[in-house]
Image (cartoon, rainbow, N blue to C red):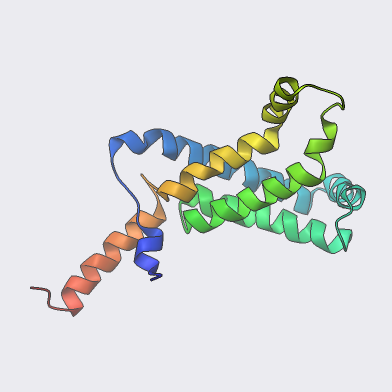
Length: 163
């Protein structure tokens, strides 16, 4: 059964420090990338051209939607608010980018090992893997998810008498 508390549950263990760093780096990266695609005219045109070349339907609309999602989900991930959801959305965006554009940059005629080497060298693959950490662990240290869950537990103890 779905529960918002369980969805936002995090861990404060010191071992989660690398996940915190991963969440912050990926979040800031996507926030800045999306922000530049939304507010820098040259990047807006480049994004529309990229969407058109990838065969994405309604490239002008989808360029704005994807840039907005990158910016907003990157900000949420950086803040640690709805970390699992935002990381999942960014993982989907990275997967679509890999399948529509990135994979075609790999030269043809390579053996399996060389092809995999090229695949793992692509940044979209790295973003997908890095998004697995917040999807799995949530916001971890210094996240609004963890703060809200603790706050909710305190409010619940006051409102509902638990034995």
